[in-house]
Image (cartoon, rainbow, N blue to C red; front, side, top):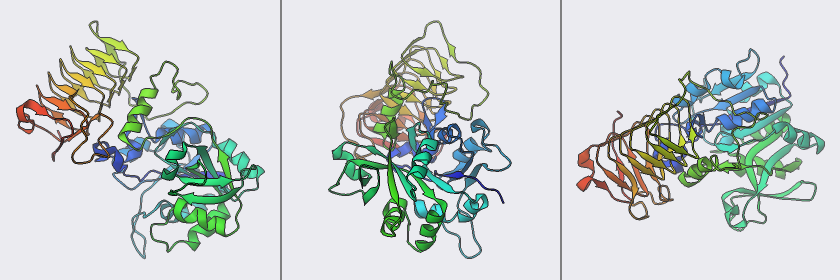
Length: 423
């Protein structure tokens, strides 16, 4: 029988509804990040950099692009005969066919996959955070403390603590109390949703709670282990970690990549971020273009100005156009004399000539004020914007739009256009 010391289970089924039109057609872990990468590249690269060569990726929502991206795991050196990366969608069983209903339920439905490797430890990860972490150091901490469960934690501002699972630990890191999204948190040590379980303990807990509807780690498994007298420890992480779950945090995390001294550095030799790279020609920067403090990915063609922005692979920016403080994803084409201010433009979008994005006042979005805020313009995958229109702040556009969709050629701040059909 194969035996692996530690295998990783990466939860990548999330819809990421707070990213609005960016995740209408694609799972959150497959959303582009930092030009040429996708969000899932970060935990996958952490695995290979930490020496973990067996990763199960649990997908569910809109998995197409994610599956195509992961493939057989070649970019992460995870194409192996034994182990490697395996995509684990929900599947029909002889007794029932069911979707994954919670994070722990998804892991429970893949018990057989884990048993194949007879691991001593199982690392549970989520596919939607941006960070670099050596899981081997966390495993050493787990072993030193003879722990049954180790939870990666990090201090957060007290006012944000109620958004997280909160742990209270003694000076040795032993967890005395665990609260899932408490109204009045007892500490500011937040769970990062990264767990190492000793395999026996995980298996017992998953089977014991298998009938629990929507079984979840924070809500059910961790409290169950704690009540059963298992040894729970908090491993404190002090590096960069960003949950890019909202448009604001997603935009910020991309902008931080282009700081003069970036807090999160994509260029470190010893901790590389791997991704599936298409075979692309080099970028082309024309004589009349100007670029300042930006990331420009391979295959991009720049004929205008790009300032403080992140430009994906194969993007074309026309003559006389000016892009500022924006994220433009793969294969998007921007016409001539276009002004783009503080916008997030998804993949395969076509923007006509003489368009202006990001005008007007910072008015709340009428349809989804909690999602489309931060003064951003957000345009979903494969959308089309016609020539000569102006678009305000806190707006969202999805689909093929025509001049008739813009009264007097304007989409005012706070408005939304959702249309069926792709280009």
